[in-house]
Image (cartoon, rainbow, N blue to C red):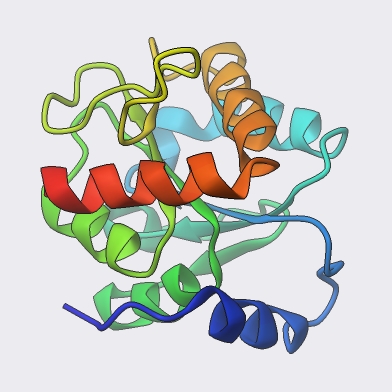
Length: 173
């Protein structure tokens, strides 16, 4: 597992990425089966253009076999995931069966996971109670994922809460 980078190091590294405004968080979307989620992913990315977030889509696993033209997408292998996780503030795992090792890798880089509700090893964040280790979506559809991203963005504006979410995620994994 890669060592955690400080917030200062992450911000410095992000400024070096082309086309990413300094004030918008970076959302990485990890897709393991683009055939299965292509339509929902297209709807989701259309909606993301209206949010104050930058996003990169990582096509991984089965998704690397076919050439899909999706905005801001990259075909990546396991070794390249680490580079993207370093820059990310949050990672959406577009799968109903989220691999724990990949979530652990993202969290090691201080990226908050956004995962399917069926994932049992992390707890959905409860703002009023100030507890939880991720943001969960009920179903792998664009509306549910979009709502979870909006919740994450709302909480991103509260650095103390954001750090606690990461801390809870690290303890859970």
